[in-house]
Length: 182
Ligand code: ZN
Image (cartoon, rainbow, N blue to C red; front, side, top):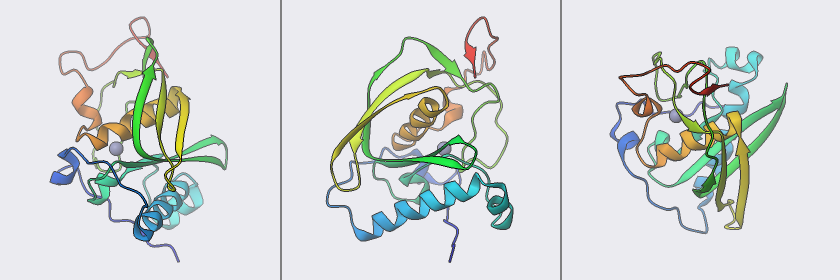
């Protein structure tokens, strides 16, 4: 049976704290929570289920959004229609990034931000992220474009940063000559 997660709103202080490293072995509870996040993010991106369960589409979630200030992120990336790649990173770190920067043309959204926030969020076009899987094995991924943005957005949550903190109030929008918009 599907039970919706209780995702905290941006006003909750958990969203503004710096999270601590998670320790191994991960508890059964945490592993269950990770699976629930994967399920919910997947459902949220499938129209039939997003309607049925009233889920706002989202591709990532970080533990602080559930009130747990430990460094765990989950990303469910739709690579083609109905095909999803799951990324579970414990204690993720960006170990290298491209000189090139990009922004999502439509701006970013966040499951903890229940309002429209306009503006371009500058992100690295490509990042290499290292971390650990649920069993404590070292893992890494080279992410680009939309997936790179998702990793940067979720890792920001671990440091108490929300996407709109990175929108320059003096220059919230860029044109194609200034920044590649995807
Ligand atoms: Zn978010």
